[in-house]
Length: 119
Image 1 (cartoon, rainbow, N blue to C red):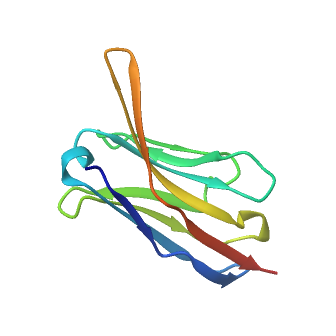
Image 2: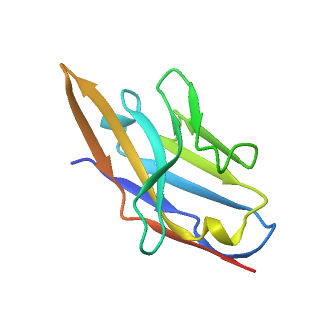
Image 3: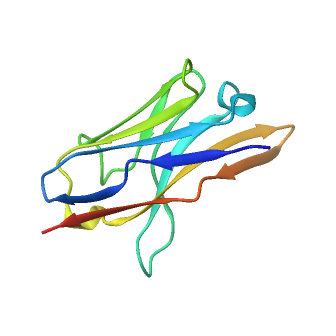
């Protein structure tokens, strides 16, 4: 059974920092690309940052320079360090694991963790 368990969300003031963690099942962590998505009320879910198994990273333009994604193979965990948080970062943040096998994309999602930035 694949599990993705997020933690680290909470309430922070504008300009503050948070680090989100996502602990993944050992069976997938080493072979799946990992990512963080977010969904604000009334908006579509969007990619925040992603990291491949080789360590290549991708960031949404809205968070570049403020957010860092990393993964620790010894802990089967992916992190999202968020600095200089803004009210527009308010959202539920979801951990994602994805892999394309023979042209079929397989993806798993965590339950989400709320990030609230007060102005």
